[in-house]
Image (cartoon, rainbow, N blue to C red; front, side):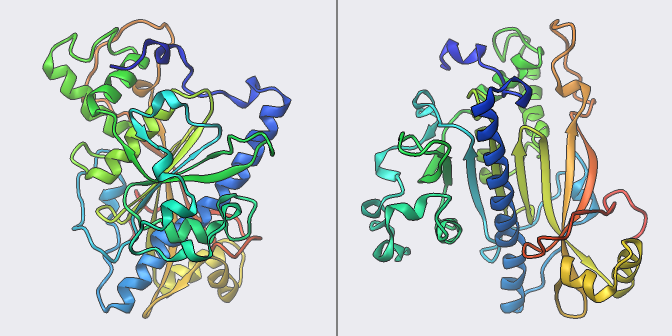
Length: 363
């Protein structure tokens, strides 16, 4: 049973409502989030692709239908795809949530706890400062811990020695909030129910649970990692700060990002010589420079990281009049808003470019 106090907390705090110090923290958070996003895109997608290549196994690129809302198509799980959940909180996760997002002293990122990991030898050269974002070795620590099951938690440092300092505080973080409770929380916010998930019958309760998954860009049949990620995203909206959840899924060959902005899915696209030349011409760039800035070489073709950015429809936003409304499962809760081709993570001068692929008629 969720504590009643949770109901009155805002979904997030907008920048316009922040004081000066909170705005500084928000700015720092967004810069650090961008840095994490670049590194995780590489780990999830590029590094996974080259693992397939190294092992002589064909990589299955996403079909366009998989990027459309409500898509159910999924690929078989593969150990070659790098999977993870990374939770990045702008503030400090409240101890009140420890029954649902489990972070305790025994899974803090400290040397004593890391020694118990059979496949992790970094504890021999680990020092406490390594877990802080302002340490040059932070990203390497993140990458080394990322293949440990469950989730990693990055949050604001709770000590008072340095304000607005972020640290990788916990590993092996379990998400343990029932799907029904998360669906009830969202449905109450969207005014589809007033109190209880089952107040309008079991059929509507099932619809609302299915719509919870659609709200986060997934079909309700998806596997445990994506379920845990979207449950964490809904849970952390109870905090008086923003948070971002990154989920890398082998089943979908994609990385999901849940933030205050909405839902994004990052995935690999395969580009032929003709497509590369057309894109380079469109951007007014030399082909070699374009490839150096945006593409990674493969056998006979190039690959790039694309992002599908989704927005919520009127049916998945609170009604303006605040009145209780009826759910219609036929109405879409999510729609594709934009698509980008991202530059390589070391091409710091290059910008993401528009590349409409999902609904295009060409391959």
